[in-house]
Image (cartoon, rainbow, N blue to C red; front, side, top):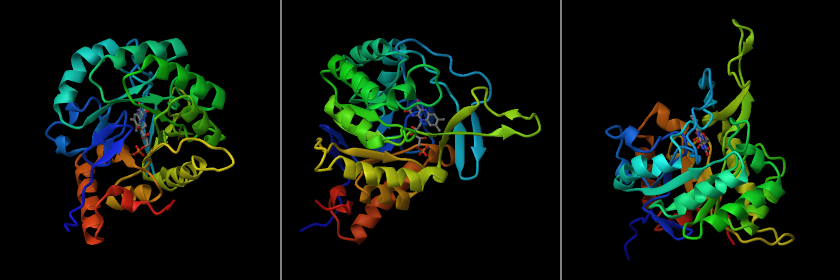
Length: 313
Ligand SMILES: Cc1cc2nc3c(=O)[nH]c(=O)nc-3n(C[C@H](O)[C@H](O)[C@H](O)COP(=O)(O)O)c2cc1C
């Protein structure tokens, strides 16, 4: 019997050639990275957050480096969903990996209308962003409360009958388990986490916050152990006998910068991982991660990604 590892994973009916997906907002619409890494070898690409109408994004500084981390306050700059479908999607589709559209909006009506357009496009899956900390309306505001998180998930689910739905959770929510339950009960096929942590920096020369919005989102290796703990806890929360809920697949992320990091998330119960900030520092990092997972599995006689999970049950 061959022990050649098979890295493919199927999440909500979508087949990914391996469990490594480019995280939203750190990989543009894919084409921006052509020539810098082997894009066709990735499992999936998650687009920058897109909204029904185009957005200019936030004024002022948008990126600030911190020890082992990155603060960003982009503010969902994007061309709008109709322009995404017309101009970006055809090129993105040709790159090879599965395509996930990261959907955002200011209110439920905007989320719904955006979802309806994506429903008739060639994307493979929607990642519903209810966790962006850098916009004044919508975004994270929907992801902090079980009731609103459930309402927006239900509305998008209805407007998106033909596509699988992943809901991206906020690490800033006080009760993650209740929000996760609410999203799953409202029709989420899979959950991803974490988005960035609310944080800030002060320019001590100017004596004012670095960002015009004051706060920004923290990502990168600095958040990894916390993100890992949240994936671990979410896995348990989805299997809590006192609060039954469908144990949907989890896509984990937060500070993954090498194969060992990705393996930790897969062992904690994630079905796949996303990689964001690390790609800025080293564009081929996702190729290295895929290779490293393969080598680990081969060395340990594992044939499927599911065998990496240490959670049992
Ligand atoms: C510059 C930047 C832009 C981002 N934009 C989005 C976005 O549009 N939508 C979204 O859901 N997450 C966005 N994120 C969050 C990432 O997808 C990811 O959840 C987070 O950065 C943690 O992963 P990492 O530590 O590997 O970067 C962004 C992150 C960064 C650094």
